[in-house]
Amino acid sequence: VPLVESGGGLVQPGGSLRLSCAASGSIFSRNVMGWYRQAPGKARELVAAIGSGGIPTYSASLKGRFTISRNNAKNTMYLQMNSLKPEDTAVYYCNKQPPDAFFWGQGTQVTVSS
Image 1 (cartoon, rainbow, N blue to C red):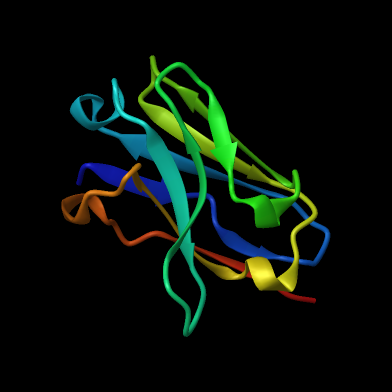
Image 2: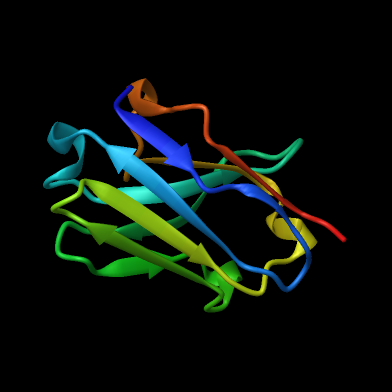
């Protein structure tokens, strides 16, 4: 499995979670990588992306609540999510940016609810 997401769970509004994406080196090393999410009944959307040099970009709707990072030595990418809201509830995926259909994994479920 080339990409494996982990770290999701149930959290109360205002809480935090840290997602991880473990990638094989051949996918990770020189590619822009992204975190995506798909909420029930909605299309999958790009949440954040990060270049091989560590420069991040974010969806404007996040308003600074999420932080994307990567550890190239460990072929791992992270998404720190703070001040979570019920509307952040979704399955979160990692993939290249732009995404490669071959690399969609099972994702990790994030549920924000009281």
